Length: 216
Image (tube, rainbow, N blue to C red; front, side, top):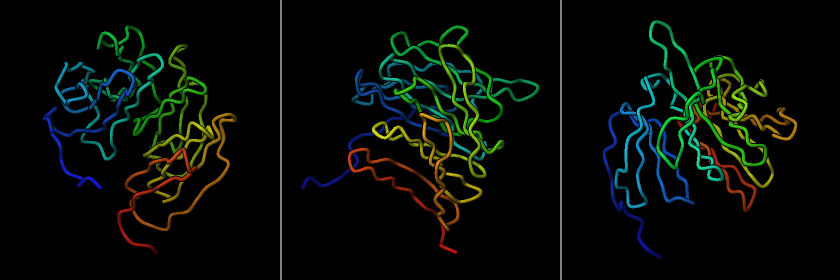
């Protein structure tokens, strides 16, 4: 097989919080202290979109997800000045500009986000409220508030089964959400400290969780 190696790298600022890809437009998106950096498939910087004061430096990563169907990018941000104001922002992938009037206020810091093409909703993990909210980006409202385990911080979607997997960093387990009903249908204990990552293999219906620490 071909040896795995680093092909290229590019600086997009400090404190990179999240990375997402739109395979239809061959664009890569990265959030940092500079805002949302847009790169082409060869990792050349196309532009950087000012998204307001981001939330990097908090104990959780920044939410970022792509709607390839409508060429929209969604990211969580703190745009407050005197007090925090957490929102889900929309960026038009065709013009690389913020969608005017597209912000949706969140009930707390959004630690992760995932777009679900089955229902057109953006699911955002709110760790301080122990829930995931489903945002309707068209109506600019929160359509659902789904209680999870403690401290939800990472999300992954299986588009084939229409299920969303939520890592709960405090209770150290995974909540399984059936998007069709908007409810948790199962909870899987991890018995490890500091779950660090999650990914879905939709072809084989497997979910992989990265763990930092040791079992109880």
